[in-house]
Length: 532
Image 1 (cartoon, helix red, strand yellow):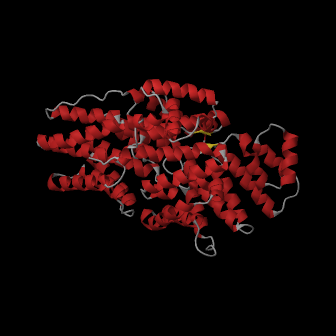
Image 2 (cartoon, rainbow, N blue to C red):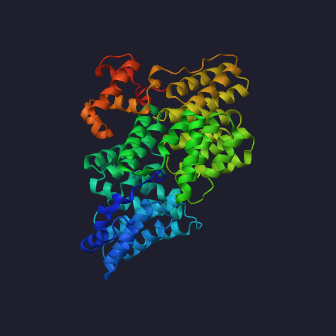
Image 3 (tube, helix red, strand yellow):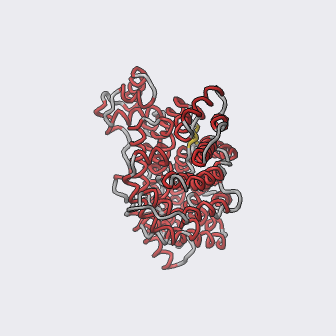
């Protein structure tokens, strides 16, 4: 998910090393040996069987919190908050890390007590003594998230923007301890470039460290950022790698990246199944994940021009006043759906909430999305100026899906103004962008509008490369990057012979005969092309 909602749950058996660091080693080992295959929570209870001092008891609380978080339990946030509070007198750095994880866990869980716990975590963070020396990435991130929670986006954005810059140099030790929160700062301030860079760095550090159990969450973070710029092939390859890692390690992962990708592609059956799966995950203890599922549904229905359904889904996605990631991204969907569905009052309310998140950021993405949304509620020259602003700003970013949607809305507006020639220009560019990216539902919406202007547009045809399975596409992409068959096999937990077999099928489907031809035959990153 945006921010922290794509949290992957580790298999319980993979928590042993982490717990061994949290509870006294000798007592932990004896407890685990005596309990065999019982749950990790029981191991912690057994480890606490002897007399513990205050620091050991705080670390035991931390172990319990990590177990609950890994297993998706809703009791993780209060456990982690208690652990952080108890750790303060003994290890302030560990307390800071624990407060950060507690904040993220509370967002994932949904903070069902009306925001009280999230506010309590944030105020505890603000009450911490200032760190000695220059602030580290962790310190900046904590400060920004706490201010965001207590005082809102205007107060939290400067610190979060500073944190996002510092997180570009996050260390491997920090990544392995709390790296799943590393993209939160960029996410909160509409900084997709920061998300891409940080997610890529974190993923590489996790790969280099051989932390297989952590791979799915970081693959998911990068896949989400790639999908947002319209690199569906890259996102699909990362999703396929997630599936390989999960199958090999037994990790559990929320299908957030796959859901985001399929909703943008406009694939109704696939997206509906993933929405149901995500809501099922949410029922276990990650209630914020349900917001993510509703956001995906809103995107899907807006692409299909089913505005009443999009409105209802977007309303649900933006229903929590305490969630800061999904809500911000779903508000433009609510503005568009409500405006197109005739509920101007609801659209205006959503726009006001959106502006609270975009104006403090001041970047082209945030202000471009706001201008596009604001144009839906204006008339005449004011509307047209806003559409021009949206297209200009979004055209300076790599977010081609957002630019295409601005051109689509402008083209629809022009047609309704009776300016059919001007409308065709915008709708044609929107259609070509959508078709090139692979946003099938939005491409069809643009095509329908073009037909209404009197111009025809062919439906997008499925190209040969689209016949590749997800695993074939991933293997082909890795081979095009220069990896050998054994290297590809090691990454995907496959034999070299299996990799060779899949590559042979790829060559046949793409009508090529060598690895050297793969880069040309595979779809490139659409973000590197000049947007029309």
